[in-house]
Amino acid sequence: MLARELDPTILSNLVAILQKELDHDSCNNAIEGYVEYTEIGTIVEKLNTSIETLHQTLYDGRRPTLEHPISFLDGQHRVEAAKIAFGEKAIWTVRLLSRPGTKLSAFIQSRATCQRLDKLSHQTRYSDGEVFRQITQLWKTSKFEQVREWTARLGAQKRVNIDMIKDNHQVFSCLDGLSHFPGLLSDLPLGSFHKHLALHCDDEIVNYLKHIRDVWLGLTCNHPDVVDIGTVQLLEGRAPGISDIDRQLVEDAFDSYEIFSKAQNPQLRVQIRSSVLHFKGLVPSLKSYQENMKFMSIGVTVVDDLLFPDSGRTKSWKRQQTDRRTFRGMLRQHWSPPRQNLVEVREGVMARCVGEPVFDVAYKQVILAAMPEPLC
Image (tube, rainbow, N blue to C red; front, side, top):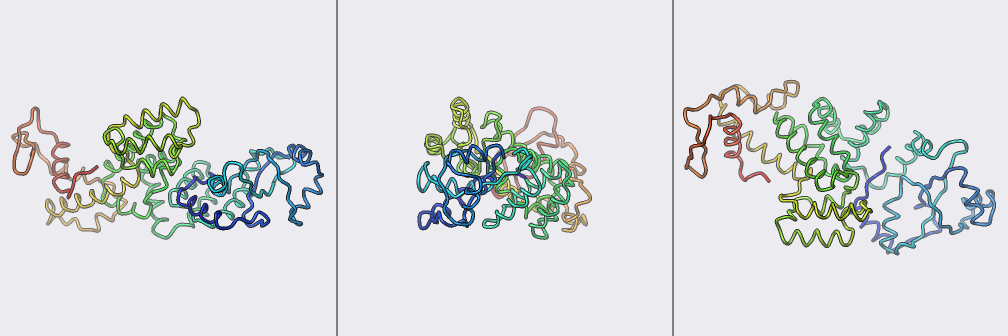
């Protein structure tokens, strides 16, 4: 099971709560920490106590204070919120878990541990992107029972959309590729994918998803694991290589570790910083994908209504998912090379182009002409 990504919205809410009230004597907010069974002796020795006395603290509330490394899957939002509210030396109640004869890695990855973690994650619902990441990971390992459990969290339409995405190999492959960037899938518009796929613009969808992947691979210098939700939220739609305002904002965010906080290696941070600041374009994300698909929907509808008014292709054709003929392919069937290779350069003004007419140029002209505004 994949651990949750830090979400700035959840974090800010927790900071506000902690600054109002924090009760260390309550176990309600205790974090479950995992240690090797062989470490128990070291912990007991540090506390100058016995295992029996340490175990008794579960019931009598007298909990000792100790600085010791642990592994934990749930509670990272509470830990980070405590650091923000009270500084790096903030303390937190931890319920230690261990299993004799079982390696820590196997204990953490066990089904029982995953189920415990899931029960502890009830306060803030998993986003659609988090659910999608979990499901794709489970698909790859053939854990179909757990796939059904995670899919059950979704509404009826989103469950249908998950299956539609899986059945479309190209789209699924692209979205799965984005799952390597932990923060990118936070804004996955899962509830809208039936509309996107119904347009039959598979090439355009795939190209934009690949564009997102390629840009972020470049920005991170091929280190996708350093992308967190806060970084995506700050960079999406910005053009630091063009806009002075965006450049200064990004500079400040790097200095304060507000972005790419997972990139702790100084040399890597310098490389990523340079890559981001020199990027000439708008930083894409799934949020910009969603907005662009709204424009694409308008363009497809306009072209469809104008070029095929009596074709018999009704809205039911758009909803049909078993036939994966693309909209581009439908237009290609009705295209024939014109005698002159002309391109409209502004309203009503045509310019002659060098070379033979090609369908792709004509297709782009028709779609762009139907758009209310240019795509970003």
